[in-house]
Image 1 (tube, one colour):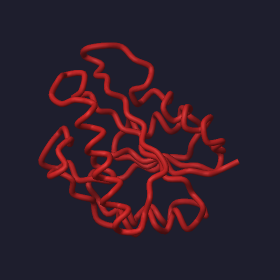
Image 2 (cartoon, rainbow, N blue to C red):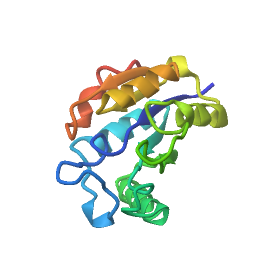
Image 3 (cartoon, rainbow, N blue to C red):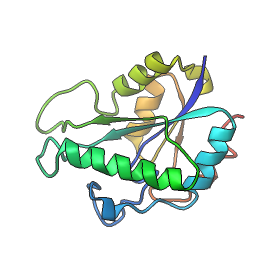
Length: 162
């Protein structure tokens, strides 16, 4: 079985200090240490998977096409630095508008990734900046790390079992 690090997107990988919703490519600002951390984790054999709630789609503030363009730009930006994400899973729903099974803190998107890629939860982690990220990871049987929003991601490296 494989091992993976699951990441929240906004506030964990990219800075969301000035915006609640990040969907425009010009608003992408990677948090400190993201590239170095992802490279090191990839070198240690972890898959890198992003799980993101994008409720602004449901609220019609932007579209899934906007989200996909942003994700393409994020992947391209990281690839220029020598790092490749393995997958990005997106929940486009918002709890004020509709019920769904894929919005964190529910673990469905994590469970889908684990089933698709044969990921062992006992060797895997969820890293995020909110309680709902932590709850989703725990519900999927992962170890979790809660970080300060928009902080230096390198801090997680000494806390993840190698």
